[in-house]
Image (cartoon, rainbow, N blue to C red; front, side):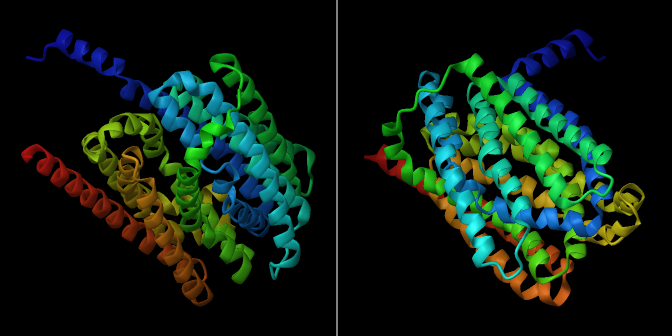
Length: 433
């Protein structure tokens, strides 16, 4: 007979574990954000139409190529140090804000010049400036605030500012719907900027109140310049193989194809929310476990991967089956997104498995190896898109994404076990001496 009191005790103990509580906080915030983001995504997609939405997606994808270098990996360096020693928070918080302000401004100027003198088809300057400010500076402040709360296990506050981001996005979308009779990508870009600025300001205030005001000490960053570069390369590579296809579609295919593909990929990102929640809740733990080497971080990953891969299978199958509902939700002009979703559905499983191999390497201090492999994947993705998009439009982009994410999944786990065997061999040799 089932012992109810024993079961209740086990559940209470499980809920007291930081990882479980953190995942629930993350999941709660992500699910709440899902409804809010879905609402403003529907408003934007239907209001702008495939062509104007495609223009916005194309500009956003271009800006995101520079986002990882806009703070030189500083939030992740903060996470690494503060997860192990919270007394250094104010210095690394100050360093992160300083680096974000300086580099974000420099990269914004660079992208405006590139748009003016390099790109064959110029994007509207106001749209590029608005999204550039929003993503290169204000969204990076918000990211740093999230990493600050994650590193100090204040996942309740992390959840709150995650929801805040979506609330402000929904308010901006409603303003577009109410105050703009003929919505355009430029109008949405300006409203998007206002929403990101508001979120960054509130996040900054919350961190300073909860953890302390910034006290920059740039001398601490000297030894982290290379690591910061590795983080930036890894994140940039990830952005490239996730988003370069949308920029390339906008440039060498059609804006309508970009909108169709961008809408389908957005749905994939929504389906990834439970995995991303688990990833966020466990990130600081990978640094703590990895302090003793890859054996520690790999043992931790082995506890998580079965759950993540199980969800990946269920989500991919469910999304494939539900894809025909897309035109009823977004409108008839997104009918072709059904086929796009059918092609993209397996990416959920690939990413669910690859993410935790990647964090296993990062937690063990092997970010350089991870970044090198991700850079290779980014190069492969660009090459495949240059070949396939002119021939097959968005279908070519989908096939390139499937190939890249599948190979990256295999490569990251192969690299993880390679370093694990190396470490085990060294340990055995040292023990035998």
